Image (cartoon, rainbow, N blue to C red; front, side):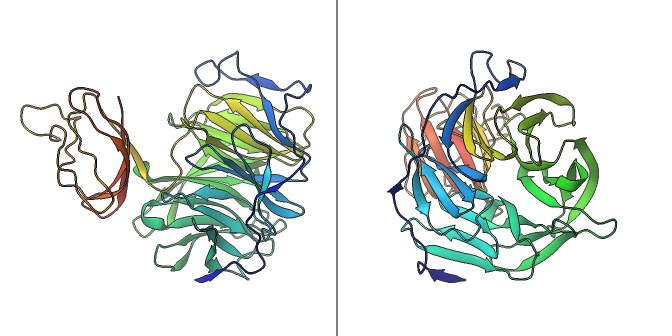
Length: 383
């Protein structure tokens, strides 16, 4: 790894992007279970040249990349867009990890912006693809799946382990023009979804214990699929590029549910869920970034599995990272108690945002704990 801030400006430079409700007539053709008929597509930023890589942090700030010139922008709620990194080394796909650090696919490597604004290069890769690294998805413990794409050739999918070992987990051969692009990993199901842009196909893979991939077959056909996002119900929201200017939504079986059509855009490159409840879909178009309120929440993409602690929740004690829970909730699978209850007593806390109380439903917040197997698990403690 190399750690440097040389040549990188991490700053708050205001720019003349505008937040507005455009006169353009966007179209939302989706069931009310996904988007309320009352909600509409809204422009978040305009005046860009090639939007990509939307990602949001827990505070609700939106980040997106602009490819020409290469910069990463930040849009805080109710504020104008500002430059976050300049230059950004052809930044493309981006995601925040469980420690709220921005992980970025750049043309020649994967970077991570630390909380002190310094930049760590997780990998420097000059030969992984003629066009460069494209998109990424995180695993628990700090692993990264990412795509490397070649427009007139065959790309690859790689896995970067938490200790820095790089493995080619998927290669394409003849016929040519296999362009792996958007990628999402569903760890709890050991499934990985991959967009093959020049084949108009979304393919599903099983992730094996060695992190190599076994094809389970095409899931659905979509016009020039670029980036994608998954919601908590398992639906896929697929951005369509190359003259297509929409997001097409499919359920987990590949059945089309509808689409969001942006007006005035030559193409749509990517999409991601964000906001405090992950019920805002952000869409990066060719020259603008849009938002749309959704009725369904996006799935957690920070590299930890999300598990909801069922009601009632009794007496969870507030703890700090490195300590263990002193209180607890009814024991999982204990005789005489419901099997859907969790016991967190004695479990090591890795990070937490928990407000405590006693009695049913008195605790709320999020806690990330270390499971017996060593992986991080995020428990959403609900009212």
